[in-house]
Amino acid sequence: MVSPSATSVPPWAREPHVEPADPTGRTHTLLVVGPGDGQTGTAVRAVAAGWQEELGAAPVHRHDCADAAVAVDALHADLAVARVGHRVLVAGTAEACLAVRAAAVRAGLADDELRFGAVAADVRTVWCVHCSATTTAAVAAGGVVACPGCARSLLVYEHVSRRTGHHLGFMVDAEDQPWEESA
Amino acid sequence: MSTTAPAPTAPRTATPPTALPAPGLPAPLGAGERLALVVVAVDDSVPGVRSLSLARPDGGALPSWTPGSHLVVEVPPGAGRERRLANAYSLTGETVHPSAYTVSVLRRDPQEGAAGGSAWVHGLAVGDTVTTTAPRSAFPPVQRATRHLLVGAGIGITPLVSHLRSALRWGRDVQLVQVCRGGRGAHLDEVRALGGDRVTVLDGRAALAAHLPALLADQPIGTHLYTCGPADFMDAVLAAARALGWPESRLHLEHFGLAALDPGDPFTVTVTGGPTLEVPSGTSLLEALEQQGYDVPHLCRQGVCGECRLRVAPAASTGVHHRDLYLDDAARAAGDCLMACVSRALPDPATGRAHLEVSP
Image (cartoon, rainbow over all chains, first blue to last red):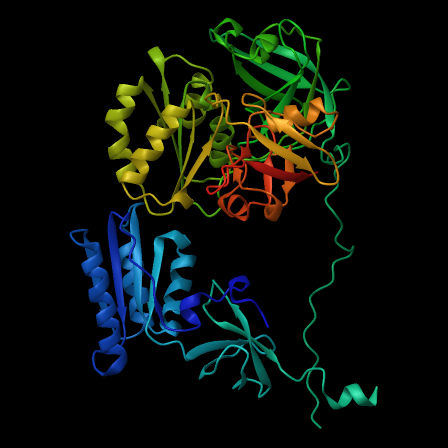
């Protein structure tokens, strides 16, 4: 068993968890990621409301976004004019949070400028090391998912790329193949 | 069975790639290895500051170094110095295949409590031999930064000179703010010539206090801040940055001219498999071990260099009072190591007993 603290998977990508807002920030971007209706939308708005209460009078640029791609666009627009002292908060599913984190990391933000509130952590994106296809599935780390690109059965490894937000997937039965026996 | 076309192959070059030719370059130095260098030039043009150029006796190229690196110079005993000193001085010259290492040293008067290392440097002459470590990097530029903001005071400009030169060479956004009295100071002409309008020179702390909040409030989010100068100056810079929301990951400081530590409370120490010693107030753990004949590797004796790190057995110890500037928070929290030159035992809150068990 891999020790959770020794992997690259953030705690909020294992199970739903909301990090506290950072009161030392001077200004904040708040990305509320999820469709307007339904359970996820309700949950992320509750997280956002909690953060806004924590932050009190600090200036907060709030963006309600239908999905992670919209949130990433809003993030880039804010970062283009942001000064050091700015913080970014992301409320969404773990999948959306990881996607936005990847964009933030690529834009040069540091871990201590980012806070996440994941309202669900059952769905993750898995990147296949064999064919580079990415699949989205309700699968836990340690589980197995079929790769849509090469049909291999992928073990979802306890590793998330900071640069892409995808979990690492590799062939689960690579050591149990016919060519091994015929050798 | 289907056949697939062979993958296109990359065009072959006539000769296989080889390592870049590097004739005459020195082999990297091993840990703890020393360089015997000769003073080849002395520059005393700035009052109180001496710039030394040190080269190999044979004139050969010296190891390259990362911007912000320093050299630890051995100062022999004598002239009131009881024991050998090891003083860290920032390198200010060329970083790549240098033919000389240059350092600038502010003279601090032994009559006013200085240990005497800088006075010794100010007594050196061209042709004298100096023993140093290889360059050590503890203040490097962050490659991911979109801007490098350098804020120095007094002789604290020295590590920032190499930062400025490197950033300009690689086309990185850089700004340097230097505080000095009367508009005079070491390396000022050099950084002005290098950086042009990227360099701001402020006369005194009051000018800095007026300039700093607006400067720190208006840096693009990818900026990293590097500061070097007297401890109270750096505290002021960092406090201003934190007040404006700068996160710790964007703040970098280079210590020198440390404030004296208090003598500390007495404690006992057991060397694993060896005797138990008393460490009185005013005596460091390093000194106590040396008095018992233990040879603990060390350089700076002020909690900066990291050489005198000892392992601590947490279960057999009451806790470590870390007073160094070397270990990071994770290493401190683990409680399984300490810097013998400055750190001491933390008493057990219940019994008041203060004890450490250490091993090399």
